[in-house]
Amino acid sequence: MKKYDAIVIGDANIDLVIAGCNELPEPGQEVLVQNMTMHVGGGAALFSIALAKLGLKLAFNGILGEDGFGQQVRDRFAQYGIDTSFIRGSSTNTGISIAINPEQDRSFITYLGSNAELSMKLLDMESVASARHVHLTGYRGRQNHGEFMETVRAVKARGATTSLDVGWDDTGEWFTGIYELMGEVDVFFMNEAEAEHYTACSDVKAIIAKLSAHSNHFIVKLGSAGAVATVNGQSKFRSGFNVPVVDTTGAGDSFNAGYIYGLLTGKETETCLLYGNACGALSVTESGGSTGTPDRMALERFIAGREGSTTDNWENASCILSGGGQNR
Image (cartoon, rainbow, N blue to C red; front, side):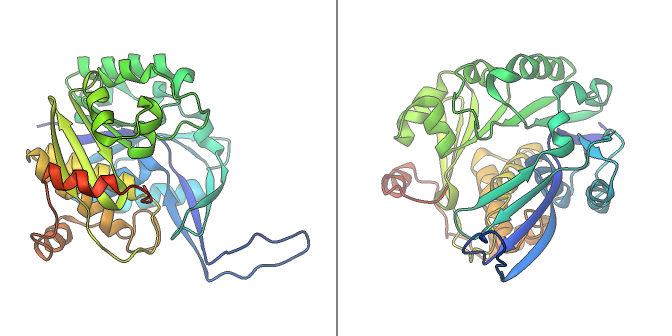
C-alpha cells in the first residue's frame, strides 16, 4: 500500500466570482452586481479537492504566498485531508483571479502571484515513490516542454502513473511538441477547443484519429455534450447530464477528478467517463469551482437518480457533436 493515491502539482489561488456584472464601470463610475463570492481556485487545486472529496488520499505540490489567502488555501486543503507539507512558501502574494459572469462566457482579471514561480522542479521526487499516481498541470508549450518531459519520465521511473490536463495555450503557438509529451503521459486530458487547435481539425472523429497516433489513452472533453475517451485506439463516448448551471468554473477539473477516481478504483472506461461527467455536472450547480463537487455517496446518488439518461453509443454521439456551437 502506498501512502498517497495521488500527488498533484500545479496552481492554487483565490477565485473572486462576480455574478451579474453586465458592464465594466467607466472611470469614476460604480457598477452594482448580484453577488460576489470567494473560493479556492486554480485547476490543480480544484482537481485535488474534488478527488479528495471522493475519498482518495492526496498530497499537493505547489507554491503559495505567506499571506492570508495562502493560509485560506492550506486550510481548505486540510479540510479534506490533503497533505500540504510539500507546498512551498513565497514572499510573493498568493494569486487571485476575478471571474466575471461565470454563468455565461466568462471574463477574467488575474494576478498570477506565487503561481508565476511554479515549476515541475517543485515536485518532490521522494514523495512520488509514495504515490500511485501523479497529476500535472501548468504546461506552457515550448517554454517548459523539456521540463515536463523530464518530470514525466522521472515519475514513471518511480512506479507511478501520470495524467496531465494540457490547458489553454495563451501564446497561440499550439506547440506540436505536445505530441511527444502525449506519448509519455498515461492519461491525457484536453477539451474540444484545445484539441481543435493542436490538431488543426474541426471534426471530432478526425481529431481522435490524429491524436490516436500519439497517445494510448486520452480524453476529449465536450462540455455539456459529454466526453470521449480513446484507449488503445478504441473510443468510448458518454453524453453529459442536463443540470441547472450556476457557475461553470472548474467543471473541467471536476471532470478530470471523476475520471481519475474511476481509473484508480479499477473501473472500466465507460464508468470513468460516467463519473467524470457526473462530477463535472454537479460542479456547475453551485458557485465556486469545488463547492458543488460530490463526495462518493453523493456521486452514486446522482448517477442512480439519472440511470439511463446518458448514452455511450458512438453513432448517437456523432449526431450530438455534428450540431456544434456548444459552450465547451
